[in-house]
Image 1: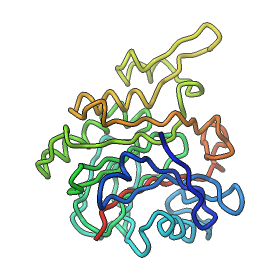
Image 2 (image 1 turned 45 degrees about the vertical axis):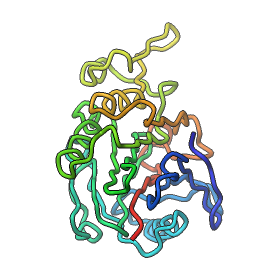
Image 3 (image 1 turned 135 degrees about the vertical axis):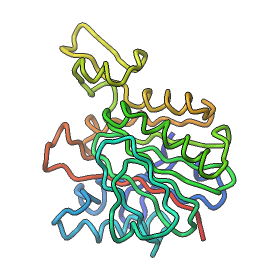
Image 4 (image 1 turned 120 degrees about the vertical axis):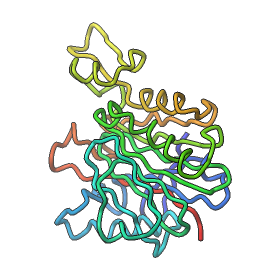
Length: 254
């Protein structure tokens, strides 16, 4: 279960299972700081507070001065393997990032989609994944685990994965085209009082982790809903284009 900590007036969420791995640093941002509008995105925003807030958040989680390797998120199945820090200045298109670099932060921004942070238990490699329904349909989570195994020889059985706050099944209404694209009947819930089907994004992501070989006991799924919890999170479904963004980050200590 994610734990909330107040650090330098910023509310940060962390998962004890990841925090227990030596040399792994991580955190999930919220909208809470001095006021309830602590936004760290979207990337390229004209809001002058965004770069300052990103720096403050990295400082709060223990990544002071680390380069943040950026993705230009497009709801794809593309995984990027960062072997240098060039993406700190120029975002690279993709929806998952992996790295074995030390002292560099991987980050994904969300406002209803699913942020997933992954690390192996020897802190050799980490990953950050952005998974909306299109990314889930493109098997972005499974792709990320397969890339870790293929590029670094790390067994999926040695990975710990945390599925962070997202638009949960209670609120995430979807059309039949989404149901068909996801292809996970267990992740779709229908109730008489609901006009449409609801998608359990967290379960869909977990299913991909399991299929890729990550043990169930090493997968942790947050039950916090971004649409329900306007006190903690931004939600594109709730706020539309004016919604800010949260940031999930992970890295390996130098």
